[in-house]
Each structure stands twice: as C-alpha cells, then as structure tokens.
Length: 363
Image (cartoon, rainbow, N blue to C red; front, side, top):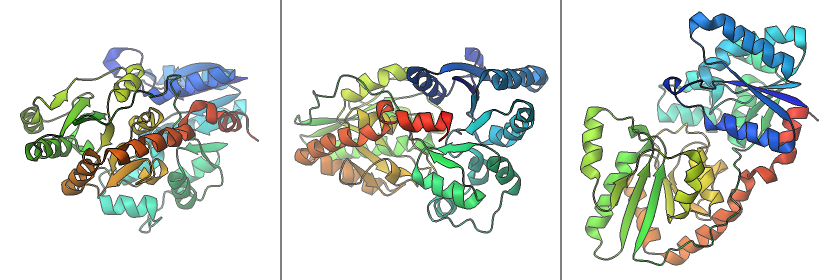
C-alpha cells in the first residue's frame, strides 16, 4: 500500500527545519510495511505550479494521502487537495501540527479564553463554518489526544475525529542507570529557548533554590535554539552560572541520551494552549519524571503525583515548591521514575501499530 505525506518538507537549510513529526510518521509507516513518499508544500507564491504538481503527484502515488499542515496551511490547502481529489478519489487524512486549524482562532487570545475553548468547550459564540465544511469531507482528522478530539468534535461538528498519540520510537536501552541519590539533581529543558516556554522563570527559580540551599543543589541543563530579544538575551546570560548551563540545539536523535543523564525534565511553558510536546513524551519513555505547567492538554500526557508533577501555569512560587519537593524527597522521585516508564509506553510506536493501520487503511 502506498502512502503520500504532504507537508512543509524543507528542501534546504535556508528554509528552516522540517517538523520532526513528518519523519516520525514516515518511519512509522515504512516500519509497518507501507511504501512512503514525501511531497513538499514549502513553496513561495511564484512556485504555485510546482505546488500544484506536487499535490497531483501525491494523489497519484498514495492510496492514502496524509496531510501534515499547520494552522494557516489547513485553511489554504485542505480545500485545494479535496478539489483535486475529485478526480483521484483517494483516502485523505489530515494530521495537523498542534491545534491545526484552531491555531489562527486561538492565536493572540489570552490564557483564560484558550483554556475555556479547549478544556471547557466554551466557544464564546465563535463559529468556523467554512473550515468545518472542509474537515467534514476528509476521511479522518487525526489529533494527538482526547482533549483535542472533544474540542474538534464539538466545535466543528465532526464525526471523523481520530486519536493517534504523539508516537515515538522507544530506545531498546531502558534507563536502568537512573540515579537520584546524589546531593544534586539535574534538571533538563529541551525546547525552543523563548520566553513563552518559561525558560527565564525556570532559570530564576533554580538560582533562587541554589542560593538558599547549603548542600543539595539543582543543576539546570538547557538545550534548544534561542529566540530571544535583546533584553531577554541579557537576562538569560545573567542567569547562567556553574549550576545553570546552556548547550545550544541538539539533534533529535541525541535527545534520548541527554534525557537519561538527567533526573527531572522541566517544561514551564506559559502558553496554556500547548499541545503534546515531543520533549515530554521522550522524557516519559526514558523514565525521566516531569515538572511542567498546567497547560490545557497536560493531563492527556502525565498523571500528577503519579509519574510527574504539575505546577500552576505562570506561578514561579509553585514551580519552586515542586522542585524543592523532589530535591528533598528522593523516594518520591524514584517512584515517579518507575511510573514514568509505564506511562511512556502509551506513546511507543510498537504499542500503536493497530491504531496507525486503522488511520491509513480505514476500518
């Protein structure tokens, strides 16, 4: 069976990096036994004919065509693909990044609005009839968790929503060397280094803890590409010291080994609409407990007090209390580690093969 993946596959470094989800899907489909080709939508306006050619080739090749788009591309390209598919009559599956077509609606809205929209299904009278019409014509709309599934189903009035977790290929080497009995605990942050991800809050909290602690220390290891303005850059650099280190970006394939060298993974994001970050999934699979903020979809990923800890979003005092709790309670940390390994299995490729086959082939 042939599968076409259509999305923003970057052709060269000047266009930026391809979303790793595209390559994870490609590897998953090929491992199952499908023949897979990638078709890029990364074109400028002057290359519209090249884009048209790519879409037609994708429809010709694939028995199933998987559309992997962000918010704007969902609005611009889904209807175009559906129009072209009148001739080819292929199975069309939309697997958007993050919140997909909801992103332009939620963009620039405050946290209270986003939380009500996604978690409480309070849409404040908003409608998106044109997008709903297109989504209903698709064979499937694939989202990464039950919270988004409920939101898409209710807001767009869909009956074709399908859940596939943010899958990862788990390492064959379990984290048997997990240690949390030393004087220090190592906390790792792997994400884009932007203020919205809460990195400056995390650095400030770690420095405050270390200033107060005479023996036990927290060491913070930061990985990711920086996107800071001049003022934020100055604050960031001022927070660096012997216990707070920045190592720059790392290749996705090295994240597993980096995680296993740390005691806790932390994502103090301030964006309440955060989706299912791959960093958190990879940490669970590696058996590294999480300390993360209370964004809307966090409970689809972790179990507070069982495999990880959740602090109130944007609350530095609560973040500090959670880190101190683990710093001073190693038995609890070890129990979270054991449970994290079990929780991570939900996201492992090998435990989602049947789900992927249903997504590609239908019932």
